[in-house]
Length: 325
Length: 245
Ligand SMILES: Cc1cc2nc3c(=O)[nH]c(=O)nc-3n(C[C@H](O)[C@H](O)[C@H](O)COP(=O)(O)OP(=O)(O)OC[C@H]3O[C@@H](n4cnc5c(N)ncnc54)[C@H](O)[C@@H]3O)c2cc1C
Ligand SMILES: Nc1ncnc2c1ncn2[C@@H]1O[C@H](COP(=O)(O)O)[C@@H](O)[C@H]1O
Image 1 (cartoon, rainbow over the protein chains, first blue to last red):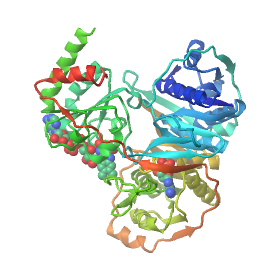
Image 2: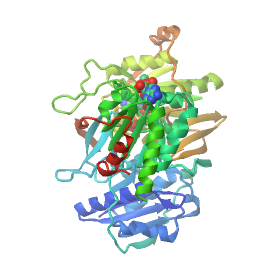
Image 3: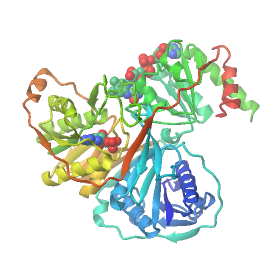
Image 4: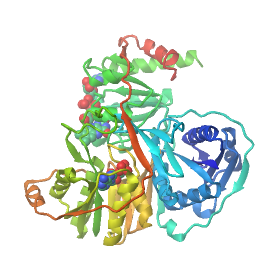
């Protein structure tokens, strides 16, 4: 019996959310008295490939066949399902990344497994197998019990800490046969803004709303984000007006995030906006209207004009950084 | 093109969520139900495709009779006809099995769904249907173009996007950017009443998961308001108290 974690890589490096999933899987393995196995798919260097061993992996499977170099939902799902069978995995953990969300349901069908998507904490195994997940777009939590023999969990990025647990893992190449039919989807092009921190993975996020008046005023938002090492985000009207790309739009119809810090500038705090950000660990709201609903959902607030407050905040952070350098 | 659009019936986005005393279900009294916003985008994209190249758009919902106003709304927006599988959905697997069963019999060229339902937030149904039918799936699709038998899809990835291509049939979960939702016009609303809505009984499906409890996040404490002329204080609190910088 084992717990299997899919360690997703980006450009050959495992993502931080993969290490979170590995640590999460390691704790489930400990609770259930079984071993943690990790599977990597695609091109990952031998040094990188060993890293899951620092977080509890006893065995690392490497599926690096030529046709698996780029992500194909169907083929990757087939590999992970085969690995689960080969390693007798009863629990399979993936990060709830864009790719993980596409893989988990396919694996669930292949293995006749129950799927708990978007877990926010460890499963409760005292009586059955219960997983807590977000529901109603951050307005609620749902406890889901999985009753199938095999169980699949996707874990929300930033909701479980990476915990070191040094092991000497066994390394194994893994090359299951995959049907040609699993390669029907072809990647034509990958476009990545490589200099930017990706929003769903970000620990800190600076976000702007309609209160910023126009795209020309995002310079200070980017400067603030750059200083903090934060990703940038925006409200829906801002991306609708093409001031910012759609990929930055957070909320009910955008992406949901749960960073350690969310700074909202000139955003009113509509219920649909809060839906995507309310699980942030700390929220700072900067708004000139003291009645803005967002203040009710905030930990820290500044009532003031963003065009005055943000430049001051930038200076204050520069000062802080040089004092703590 | 023969298109199937999966629509979920969900509480309006402004709904204040409350649960029954046993915490097992949503209080639906006074709640306005709508087409899941992503499914509405999927529906619009489907209509755009058939308007440009001909074909039909069938909408499907797994739900009891209470979802029919939502289905009629989809017909008013422009769907050709509708199917309702007469069952309260138990979990995503149940829904996917019902829809796949119908899709197997009807040979749709394209199946569109939403990237997630805003009530359950599973992001499960489209990829499950894809697996059950043995066809490619893209769970979060920002743009979808069709040329002859080939579709080009933009998929969201962390910090960027991927351009994908494959032959039909395929299933995709619509997200922001794929199309702007349409408001039904008077003629649409009138004709929706007479468009065919077929009710089908569900097939048996084993149960793998069950929601046993819902609850709401704990409210945040009182906001700590910092004077606008003392931003240093905020930086200090973020360092010493929140420990995020
Ligand atoms: C179906 C549906 C789905 C939706 N999904 C989303 C979603 O996913 N995400 C989302 O964000 N919205 C969503 N919305 C829209 C949402 O209801 C709000 O309209 C939107 O969030 C408002 O954006 P905003 O806060 O940027 O703008 P506004 O509501 O216009 O607020 C601007 C704020 O800026 C403040 N301000 C103005 N000038 C200054 C200044 N100089 N300095 C400081 N503050 C200033 C104002 O006091 C105000 O509070 C959705 C709506 C619907 C109906
Ligand atoms: N009961 C349902 N009937 C029809 N389609 C559904 C139903 N539930 C979910 N879907 C479709 O599957 C998508 C993803 O739903 P979910 O997996 O619940 O997040 C939705 O956007 C719909 O397109």
